[in-house]
Length: 304
Ligand code: ASP
Image (cartoon, rainbow, N blue to C red; front, side):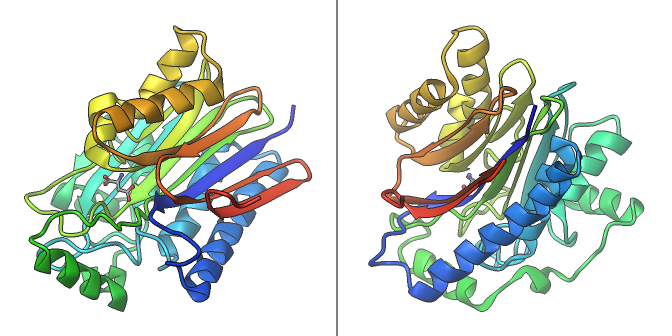
């Protein structure tokens, strides 16, 4: 048995003409560093759960992605962070939403899973729990990078509506370890100009994040409202378990369902067999894969 790791850094309107070479390079470098962190765990016999957390932490700290540092801004100009993690071996799960001061939302999600009787904690309560667990605290400004204010200003000038040229920058990781166990992690700042405590699919178990050794581990990016309504990540697992569909066919069908609901987005998934699949309905998706002797990093749809 060997291992497989797939990660994403969000899907969206990225095309060779719209993404600067610097943006493309920093995204590729960030994906490479996240792969390295996850591979180091899996290569030394570590668990899929540890690997997805390690990969997600690297992407959360990387300002090139909309998760942790570099997250998009709410209408009030601050970052509110969501994350979820799930272990496919026993379907334990932990999640946080609306955090504002904890550096590593994904590790807080894991702490919720391992050190509380709950699955989802939100807002001040989630940060208070993280503090109690000794997780590093930062000022909310630490998450805010310069380009995000300009992006918020653009969206607000357009009436606060979601940007058609959007690059969803949510990050995610899915892995299967050498024991055949799968795990999934997703972390995000959500959508630019979100308000009223809006929460997307990423921290909702079954919507943007799901793992079950009987089927697959999956992490989504895209219009969260559509993934919530489609229960996208769980739908993929059920297509496989109950419907007998294959990993890639099931994933493609879930994305068709997202489009049918008026949404768009992307998914990555792995099965306990080691098979990996991904897909997206946008021009591009930051994505990467590693397994025995194989390593790929892609941005655009037609990247080879
Ligand atoms: N799915 C995320 C959300 O709706 C956004 C993203 O993928 O960037 O919060």
